[in-house]
Amino acid sequence: MFSLQQCLKPVTLNSTFKLHNKIMAGIKWFLFKDGACATNHFETCGFVKSDPLVSHPDIEMQFVPLAISEAGTPQATQHGYQVKSFCS
Image (cartoon, rainbow, N blue to C red; front, side, top):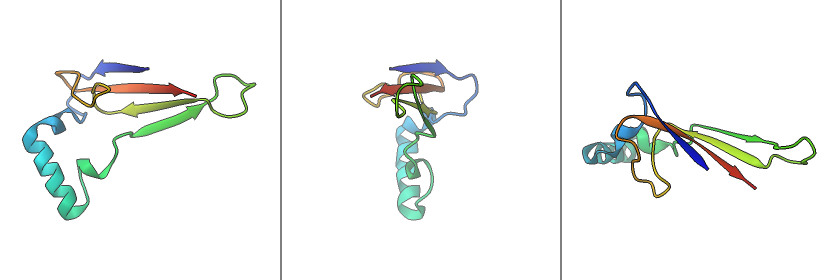
């Protein structure tokens, strides 16, 4: 399950989906191992237990500073972010 939210300020990674920005990000990573291509963009991740009786965390939550679909294409026309959760 994931939830998308638009963001009022241009602080997300949406601009990286423009072709010229993709090219520049690739060049920057290739030359300096830095920039947008140097991270997997799962900036925050946490594991929680859904019940005190469960012996181990069974829910994973991820925050991504980008509004994308499951196929990896931009979802929002504005800057946005999403929260994903996975249950085991």
